[in-house]
Image (cartoon, rainbow, N blue to C red; front, side, top):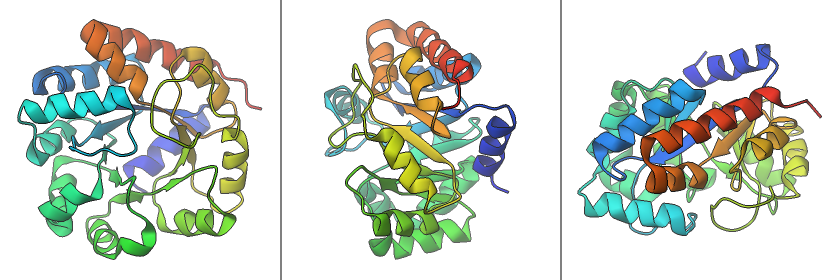
Length: 259
């Protein structure tokens, strides 16, 4: 079993969903980003999702876009992302395909594995176009994670379900990332449809920003992914704000009543 398999199995045995926390490497500085990741874990985050800064992050909303640009302006590169992975178990990288392709899929997979990473989420890559990455990930026993969305057909979900390892990332809403006052109404149905096509855990992201929302999603999903709210907390309140929000989210996940 992989680190992600073990993690989701442990959370399942505890009767709860896993909490996945996203922060980009190098924002607002490399040291601060790593300190914030450590604080998230200490406060109850189960999986660290480390963002690879990219100049054109199409899926991201303004908060994460600005963090990506600030990180790039500070000189963050792929080597820094991989360095940030070390010490966080399990950790996955969230990265757009172009930087990985330029780095070299086989080299990236080997370096990610050497750093202790469990896998990578590639939001702009689909399984049918991912042969080099799938081969490299398999060689290094890494989890390739692709996304499904409310617009995904059952056939598309089935393809993702049999290609992914670790878990399936279910985007709760159509559109870019960002904290929202309500979680997408289609999230529960998307989880149901995805579970019909795969035995993998299903983690829901895009929109969760409070402990109450985390509890809502955790009542029907296997994982809760939080990104923009944590990035905003780091930007406006520093590491202490990240720690407080992570603790609130972790409490929400643990207080959830299964639907």
